Amino acid sequence: MEDIKNRKYVGRLVYSVLTERKSVREALLLFPESSDKSIECAYHALVHFEADEDLRYKDYDYREEQNDYLEFIAQTLSEGKSLPRNIIADYEPYYKGIAHKWKNDSKWFWKEFLRIINF
Image (cartoon, rainbow, N blue to C red; front, side):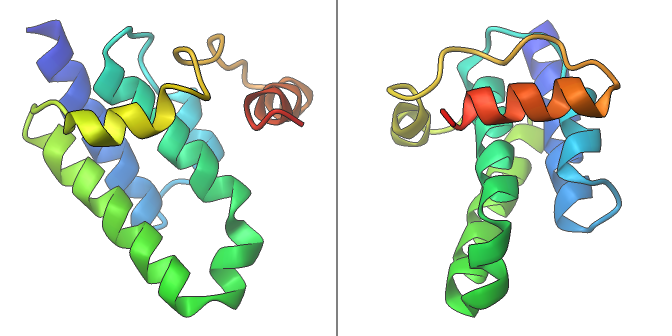
């Protein structure tokens, strides 16, 4: 039951990024601590969204595809459903869970952000 509640919450966070009501950083700061693979996937999808900012600016088709992908994630989670296994599997080789609980501190944010994208 808690997973469903958290999925719905994360779905709303992803929508808030897509509608530019929140930055990726603000949304990541609000992510619940969870071992739910769907929530972990959404977390890392947002990290990639932020990391691809330059590419998104230059390539309209890529931006639209990525927006559609995040919208699908947001819609599925907003309904309390688990993401399809193939989407979760795309992220599993690269990431293990959600990073440490984000602190509201820009130095901490960038340190963790760079760690996540393996910089």
